[in-house]
Image (cartoon, rainbow, N blue to C red; front, side):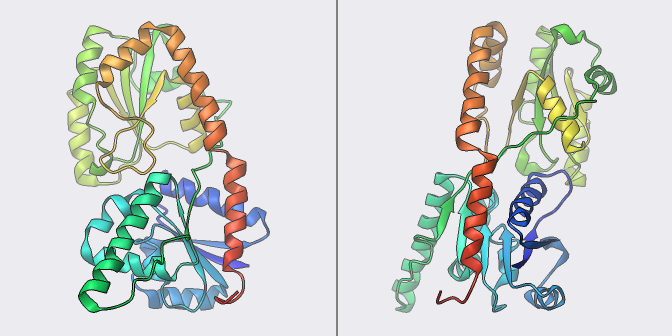
Length: 329
């Protein structure tokens, strides 16, 4: 099939990486995948023209609201992939909630990254349907039930073999022996929802006690106003460094060389860490090598079991078949 794929494609972000990976899965099955940035379009009519121009037979959208709303009413089948903000933020706004409910009703399938995300979505739009039934005397349509599939994001890392760790440290103004260095890496776009300043003060205090400990924040400058706030804060914080966006292969190399990766977000569908009593637990990690080794081993096994790149590929290649043929098929 020739597929239109709408996603938010801001460079060096999780959405863009996910979209590129899913496109690769679909193209490996022989489909042609026309990937477009949802932010380049303002109305379904623009998408209608695009569908005609590209001769698309079906469509896929990453984000129920940002992408899915543009695919309604075009007479071609489509599926959607939930983003974290769909159920954590956009669903709380009545107008967006209504639009998203209609998108979900029309979609042939939906993909959630976690069971909890699926349960939240089912509860959210089931409640909406019950409300409509009570206030408008319309029948309840369980359009989310049986339509949402859970598929964790697949992981495939490609660290740059030529990456020079010492050069990176010098460029980051970390003047400390690499042999006794503990870099905690926070990867995120500089926007408020990612809350990159959450740990800055605590890390700065810890660095003054233990000079080998650094927090490095890596990511693109998404929100210009908030970026200025982050830069100003980091400049005053000992032991905290801010670096810009990096090619994915280089970033994977930094992940490979750092001591630990942390995550901070006020609205996260794929959170890798809950930052409670963080410094206390991080100090324990530094002082107990056996615990560090255990976490690494368990982490690898968890990724192998729940975030298989091949399983993700198989899932999307199977789901996309639901877009073949008419609605009655």
